[in-house]
Length: 323
Length: 131
Image (tube, rainbow over all chains, first blue to last red):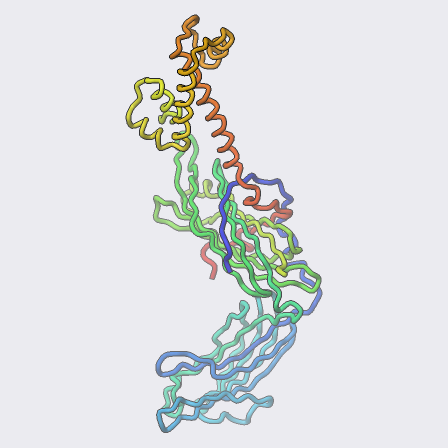
């Protein structure tokens, strides 16, 4: 949620620099968990795709789960909506029931970190047309999903569906002690170069584990390109966007995952260059962090790249706990 | 190069030739109205004052406005000197005000960071848009 944006100009402060800080290595010694879900989705003859059944389980890292999911459809004789179902069972059925697939799945949670959930899986599709088995690995963002299998369902007996598919999704379960907590982000953009300086401020807030987007819009800086006597100025239009997701940890710290994107485009030019990054940081509430964003390196012209590199862009973030 | 608006107004008040464009621009400048009122006020006060300034006043004015024409202390010259003093005072006040504005409100400045975190190209910073 975006609350406000303020612009101002200020002086730069001297700081302590770390190339990693407490980044990704300061993970607390508590178990990491994720909820994995196998989901059957079906696409109707009118084009919309709906989930029609799922099986999910919360696992700790290293844990595994299995599921048997039989898809069936009751085709109505009249014009009433199709009645579809996915029947789950603990022990695998001896044979598929009906023309639609029986999916037998197994998944092992390899890693459960913020926005980075790694799952090894095996699925076996059993149907009158034959059996198919596939083994794979998926690296999922939170609430992301991977399409594992897809089955066209052209037979009249399949009912209203044109196709059915099997998906895998993952999410991080929230600690009940923090589910309703909110985290505030005082997030500044500072862009400074040769004789120019611009700041913009966003004040954001998100719930525990909620991803909050930020976008500073377009800001322009006059860059000095090249060196004397061939020096010239170029007005560069720049953007900085990204998102933040945080979680309060049992030890009181805040685990922050910040994704940032820095783009540049000359007002008198036809190219656009951008670069992005993802950083995980552990911070104490109220601590102020400065994240330096390197320039896009794909700028072809060396003098222009140098000018962009001399335009330092940074995000200054202060996370706080909202009562 | 554009002229200082207050100088243009001062010259106009002094009866000196002023380009119409420069005068129009000067009248649109911040504080132009107040400056004109001040100039008129000074002129009125001086016109109403028939006492002769002391030699010390002349010396001070000559030092301020760089008038090297020793012994020429006509009322018109005194008026010009007084207007120059007003202009200088206004400029000083304006400079102080602008200085405060450019320093910014401290409440709108980012807080001082205690840690700098660098993205490393090729490691956690990559070319192109985020997928």
